Amino acid sequence: MAKILIVEDNPANMKLACLLLHSAGHEVLCAVDAESGLTLARAAQPALILMDIQLPGMDGLAATQLLKQDPATAAIPVIALTAMAMKEDQEKTRAAGCDAYIAKPLRYQELYAAIDALLSRAAPQAAGPAHPH
Image (tube, rainbow, N blue to C red):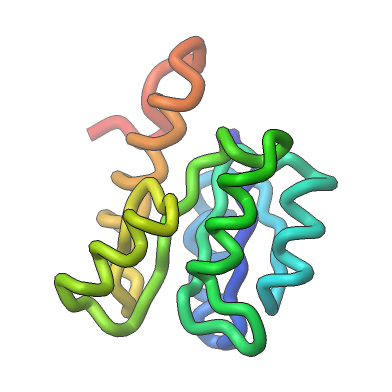
């Protein structure tokens, strides 16, 4: 399966995201702030990043912009995770370069569907969807 980086500062949300990704068979990398997330993304080159928007210090939108400006990480799909699901937030995440947007609390069907869609788009040579429907 895919290597997925989760950038999330809330321990309960991190635990849930890790559990969902592990049970889907993915390799999970974890970062609790944007700076360590950027470092890990550059070093590990994950197939996908789940990025919390409200992070301490640098927020997830600023971190996503940096990822998309860096040739080493620009092609990695980023899914924005936010507790504030408003239309303006969705537009801000797209403007920052996020490839998808999921409101918290995480719903596993929505998370898996977004991951499958982005991973199949990023790697068409992959052998079909990870979660047959």
